[in-house]
Length: 551
Image (tube, rainbow, N blue to C red; front, side, top):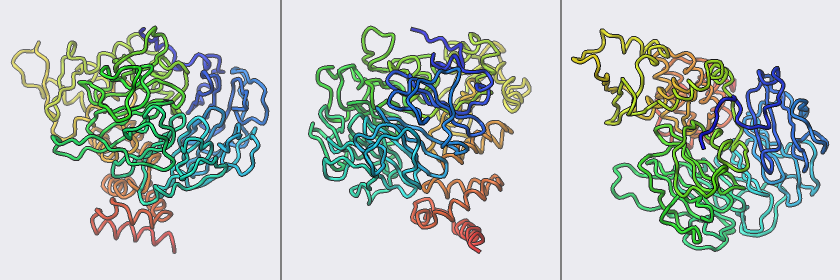
């Protein structure tokens, strides 16, 4: 089935939104049993909700159904800049840019993180200093700025990770992870995973189908090290880069772009044609693909898996909507984002995370004519139809001269006739790029085609390199996108790297923001690898700037 991308929103529940509200939206979050609940955030940081509101899901102070043409404001979240929203089966967590954590919904298992056992019809503040969240069916993980993990909620399989099976109604630190600096957390239905800053993977909780990847099917009440295959032929150490969890399966993305999976395989969610659907796997197995990947996504209440390749293609597999049979191995689609993949292929029709909307870009796509834009998107990097070939690190990117000359002033000059020396005018142009990596230049060209800049938040070097490209190519919009994303992802791990970039590119406002962040987290930053590897003059500069704040 070929998806129809005509609407800027792919979820039918959003089609009745008021046009005035639509123009002011910056974020959406679709959740619930089948995508029946919606939270909206405007550019003025007003938060609205509509939908069935049955458990109560919307944080509005009541249980009444709210129609999409009359969404109601969640007053207690007014003017709070939300950076993430996650939801379990019957509870919702919202995170602000200041690290404040709010929760609402059912609380039968303590999943709200509140000391009482009552449900909450409105958001309640339960914590601070949080940078990342993950929800299972009835439990939650929270990651702090200092790389520590807290957990609460249902603990029948040990998914809280505190060496017991007792439910926890308030956040408790996972002591077993305390020696490690954790950079990523994820939850399945009843299992949990965490990745350290060194790329080591830990897993705990429910393990009936081997979803922890430990070689057995025993539940684990404390985090256990997951042993990944050795990569003897690799010149560079291969580590775990990212994780994603379905209800009873797990996906593991390695730093070399390969994907491994483990757990239940009843709907082919492991993506391995060599693994019988009746068996699954209790150890991580490699998903066979000629492509390499940069993003993996699943959802705690599904048997659906998806990934985005380094070439920008969106792949799906497992239990997919509009398919009579499960998709047994990763299937390439014409989609360009994880949000679109969930809208068209996931049976729940939810957003896998808080969806940041590029309204301007999507509106341009809509006005320009959807069919033409769809074909243009699909033609990007198509070796069967191109007239310009960029070669970077012995890899090719296939594009179209006419479009690039319209989309970029810098590339317009590069592709001008006087720059091109070729004997046959009908032959494609071949240009070798030495200044940028394949990954960054590919992302830039794809951005020109789609208005979508997809680089992992924790890929610090890529963001800095893209910032360099934006400066060199005089791409103001791209520069702003880079800055927005770097501000959003500023952390203990990347603080020093971004400080060096801010100095290099003379971005004084960003430099000041980093200094303030450093001042507020000085002890954690000084213990980080980034600080220890920073040049002595920059260390002195950063310390000096921070000392001026203290005066």
